[in-house]
Image 1 (cartoon, rainbow, N blue to C red):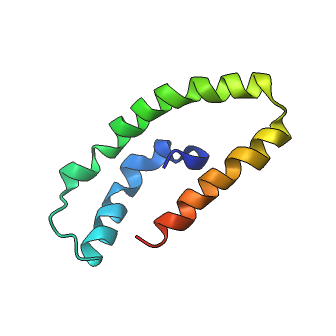
Image 2 (cartoon, one colour):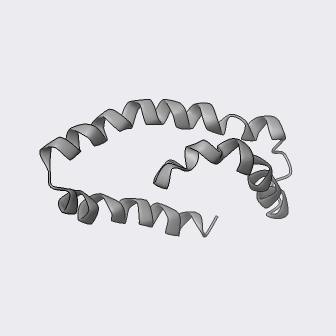
Length: 82
């Protein structure tokens, strides 16, 4: 969910994510379990945002887009099968 800055809306979409998983048959999830998303995303962001800054200073933007954007798009594609 870090892709395209969606961490800022994690609290707003948590009920929709919970409803989605309930509709898929995973009824053991609760609202509490969805509220763990935001702290996890913040910790992951703290670890990887400095890496992104370092890459941005080292490589041209078009190189980063062509190399890293497919990873994010692949993640979105794979998540559509869950």
